[in-house]
Image (cartoon, rainbow, N blue to C red; front, top):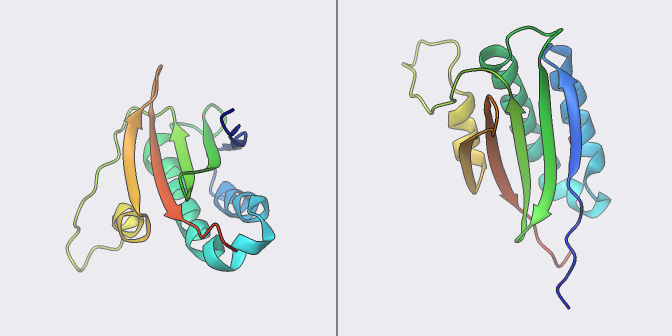
Length: 137
């Protein structure tokens, strides 16, 4: 019989700057206690960057759009998907050294073992990033 996978954890947050802290806290609290020392900081940073990018570049109005987060373990990784319904498609850029922003996906690229952008079935995009975890602890 195949192993039944865990059900992903799913949240919705308004497209408002206060949601960044709330999303980071929700993700951190959902991790098993044994994995928090290994994944907590990096997963929190990924969450902050992806939710911030979604609010700044994807969502149109905070009273209309929601940021969706999904977290699930699979294949030795914790996967985080952050989605919005905005028309933009997140792309990795290399800003000049004097730029004050534009480094969010560079940070995601550095932290995550793998990441990608996938279009949503109706409108918008999801950024999906994975961090490895040790299954022995």
